[in-house]
Image (cartoon, rainbow, N blue to C red):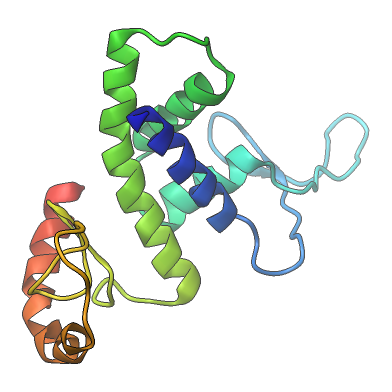
Length: 172
């Protein structure tokens, strides 16, 4: 059941990769060097098209969220295995999916913040034990968040900056 979490988070990332404006067209790029190919050298037709899911996600993860192409390719392969693979996964494939889920959560959180215009210093924060909106507690379902917690958040925001910076460096 835990591997289903990867699929749920992946779908969230796909939704966040959708354009926030009307569909924007892009040009095909050379597979080797990445140069835009605006016109076909044979028939002189434009190569402009609407980006597909993989193109949108690759741009989001590698360009906007500053992850390596290898990280994206690993996550994409795991996605294909989960959604288009076999009915029974090997033990190693299940372990890989569980490990990729941790990275995918962080990437999806950053994509959400990007979409909402939030900075890395705005809550929620990814920490080792889960997610946090303030320094005193974590969203690990240990207790309910109270109005007092929210009031205390503004006081503790500055204290979190150093912790977030350290966590961000350790995650990458």
